Every structure is written in structure tokens, then in C-alpha cells.
Image (cartoon, rainbow, N blue to C red; front, side, top):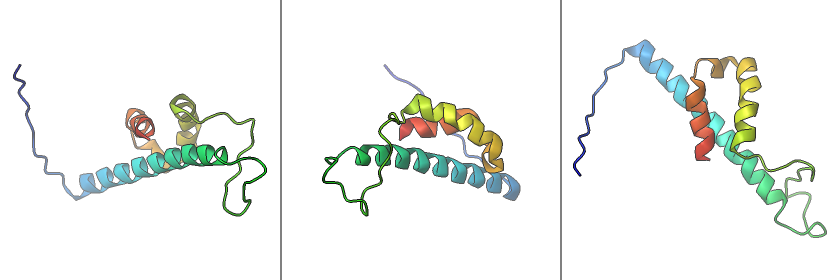
Length: 101
């Protein structure tokens, strides 16, 4: 089966380019935060309770469950209301960044 693909070159002006770079920066921050949250949770459960070093391990309370995609997606809504940097970015774009982590 042959599928056709089209690609279009865009030429944004300086204002549009700055806005797109701000979107990319916000998406990068959301992705990195979501990834760090998951990695910290996993790292806090790797070692035995009697062998963890307080200085080198980030200890997360045992009652907190794994921060999966749905929990992070739901937590994104109130954060987006508080943070003016995230208000400009579409919610679907931010959610896809969380999903990739």
C-alpha cells in the first residue's frame, strides 16, 4: 500500500516564532517534571527499607500511589490555572508530553 505524505514549510514572523518557542519550553518543563516524578517514585521503592541512604534516596511516603498518566493528567488542570506560562499552551499538547514520559 502506498501512502502519500505532504510536508509544508512554514515561515513564522518573530512574534509567532517566540510564541512557538515558549510553547516548546513549557512542554519541555511539563515532560521533565512528569518524568522526574515517576523516576523519583520508582527510586524510592527500589531499596530495602533498612538499607536506604537518607542522603542519596528521595523518600516518598508509602501511601502515595504511582503517578501514572491519568493522575498526572488530572493534576495538570489546576496547575494550568495557576501557572500563566501553561495557559497559552493547548491542553492536548501538554497531555501528550506527559504520556510520552
